[in-house]
Image (spheres, rainbow, N blue to C red):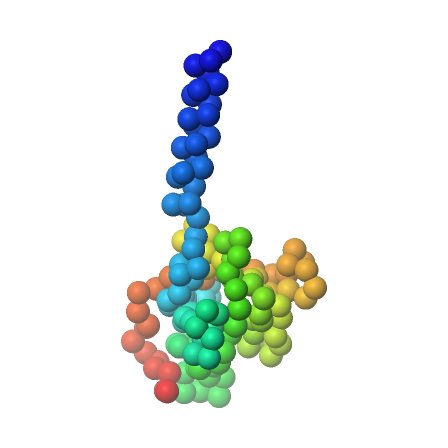
Length: 142
């Protein structure tokens, strides 16, 4: 029985030590992310006026240069990272023109943006995939 208890404690310790390697950190959300419909790329980086906050904006839009162009539109501003998610801020949905409370997390290699009114559990999640570079065309004008 003693060897079983020792093995169990060792296993628990190992999981405790290894788990942080699996957990996402605050920097994992930074970078370029393609929307599920492949119609826009968002860039997340520290906010210009608050380097400890995370801001996101559209840097590529399949409709760039057209009337429906959303290039440069701010998509999110989240003030703090806690419990593996960016929180305390807003996310903007350009499809309906509304701002919502928001949470953003990286899970299984995808960026999950949760927009909600009231409580997070009643929200909707958008899933984005990381991209290394922007598509060649069309180009968003600065």
